[in-house]
Image 1 (tube, each protein chain N blue to C red):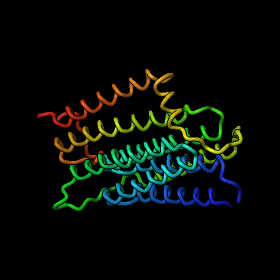
Image 2 (image 1 turned 30 degrees about the horizontal axis):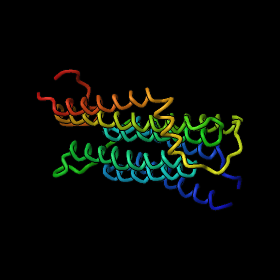
Image 3 (image 1 turned 90 degrees about the vertical axis):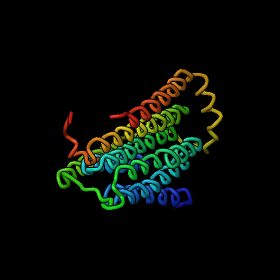
Amino acid sequence: MIEVGLNHFLVISTLLFSMGIYAIVTRKNAIMVLMGVELILNSANINFIAFTRFGNFGLQGHLIALFVIVLAAAEAAIALAIVLNIYKTLSTVNIDEVDSLKD
Amino acid sequence: MNVYDLIFYLFAAITLVSAFFVVTNRNIVYSAFFLLFTFFGVAGIYVLLGADFVAMVQLIVYVGGILILLLFGVMLTNKITNVEIKTGTINLYPSVIGVGLLTGSLLAALITSNWKTFPTEAPLPTTAALGKMLLQEYALVFELLGIILLIALIGAASIARRQS
């Protein structure tokens, strides 16, 4: 068994990324799509921090990870407000049924 | 195999298994709760990478904030009393093939590429250094992020409360 190194963390983040893509592509519920986006942001953060640990970059990767977390919080708040509005208007959050621009 | 490797595989298993349940479970409330374990696993991986402050921020913001927000979204957009909270899937087989190809090519690319790594030393506490960087070189980004959060909160409140 080889020692845990950079490749192990990159493999984990790749798998998280592809599961996030899978959730975005296949799930009907808009909130499940949001969860897929969160998985993808987490995988990007793992990459940033892994390269900070195994490269010689100082702490800038940690800062960028913090910025990503802040933007994810803002994005989740806005997206949930939009989803609530869609639900109030169309009584569904399934994104394959939400296909009208104006009612 | 030392303790570090064992803990790494434990957290990796927690993260990946619960992420798999997140994307495949038909009950969206279960998905939200499995997302909790995924975020915990990712925080553990951050700790293993020596990022103590980012791990705590991950726990506080993701588990305490974003996940609760998602659960509110689930509760407010489903008729819990009469319809069970199930969610369907579309494009199942094409997307499994596409995601499989994407994953395979990404894994092949990153395993065959020769990353230049530096020898790692024992991780140091990062909070003081991060705070200094945030308030000195990255002060402008820090202020902009604050403004973005304020605008996002005001915008979310006004979108969600808009009268028809």
